[in-house]
Length: 423
Ligand SMILES: *Cc1c(COP(=O)(O)O)cnc(C)c1O
Image 1: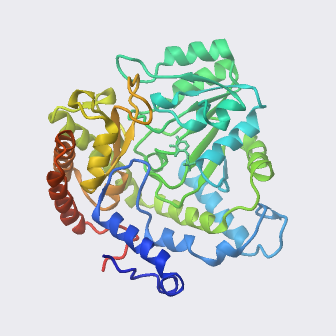
Image 2: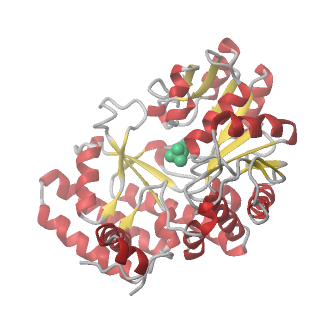
C-alpha cells in the first residue's frame, strides 16, 4: 500500500493517522473523481492551509479586532478581501464564513427574522438544503417556500418563481443550486426580486470558479448578495465568502461576526487569498472554459451511448444522469462505479419517483479531472467507463469493475494531480 511520503512530522507523531492521509492521497491519485463539488487544490493552497496562521485568534475585521498581534493577519485578510473584490467585481467581500452553509445562514441573519418567508429552489429539484428545505434549520426557523423546474425541459420555471414571489412576498430569494446543469439566469431572478422587494442571494458555490474564469455569467449586478464556497470550482480551501454591494456591507459583516461566528480561520483565509490569486491568472480562464468544454463533451458522449441527461445536457461543469431507462438505481450505480475507481454521487433527479436515499440518478462533474489536465479528447473514454460500470452494476459483474479500475488507475497515472505527491 501507499507510503506517506510527504508528512515526516505527522508520520513520526501519529503513524496511524499519517497512514490514513497517505491512503487518501493514493485514492485521490488513482481514481477518476467526478463529484462536481470536489476538486484538487494546488500545492500552494494546500501549504497555506498548513501554516501557523492557524495559531492566531482574530475576532473582528482588519483594523477592528478584539485581539492584539494582528500585524500580519490583518494584511492576510485584506489581501483575500481585495482579491475577492477584484476577481468577482464586487464592492464588498467577507471572507470569514466557515463554509457555505454558515455563509447562507449569515445571509438569513442579515436580512430576515425567524418565521419570515424565504423562497428557494427545492432540494430534489437541484437546490441546496440551506435554501429553506425542511430538514435544514433554514426551513424550520424560516418559512421556506420552494420553486422547481419545468417537467418538460427541467429548466427553472420562472413563471412559478414569479407567481410564488408575488403571492408569498419573501424577504429573501435564493438562486443557485447543487444539481443545476444549466446557466442560471441571474437577471431574471433580479427582476423578480426587485418587483417584490426581496433580497436576492445568488449562491454560486458550485460555479464560482466558472464565473471567476468567465465561463458562466456573473450575478453582478443582479444579486444583492453573493454567497459562495471557496472549495468547489474556485479551487481554494474549504471555506466560503459573502459578497455584496457596499450598501449591504454592514449587515453582512455584522451577521457573520458577531452574529454567527467567533474567530475567523486565518489559515483558511490565507489559502483563499492564494486561490483568488490563482483565479485571477489567465491560466484560470483556460481552466474554467476547459471544465465546461469537458462537461459538454462528456454529456455528448453519454447521450451517444443512450443515457438520459436531465435537461438534455449541460452548460456548466455538471451533468445529471437519469438512470431510470438503464434499470439501475443511482445508488447501486454509484457504489459500483466507486469499486471501478470512478467516484460519483447518487442524486435525485427532478420529479424522482424514488426516495432521496435511493434515487434514480447520479451526478457527475468535470472540475477535478480538468485540474489534472484531461481534455475533451478523453471524455469519450470516461463515458465508456461510466457505461461499462453501469452495465456491470446491472449485471453484478464485479470482474468487469475490477478491470475498469485498473484502466482508470493507468490513465490517471499519466495526469498527476495538483497538490499530491508524485513519487
Ligand atoms: C456546497 C454548497 C453549499 C454548502 O457548502 P458547505 O461548505 O458544504 O456547507 C451551499 N450552497 C450550495 C449551492 C452548494 O453547492
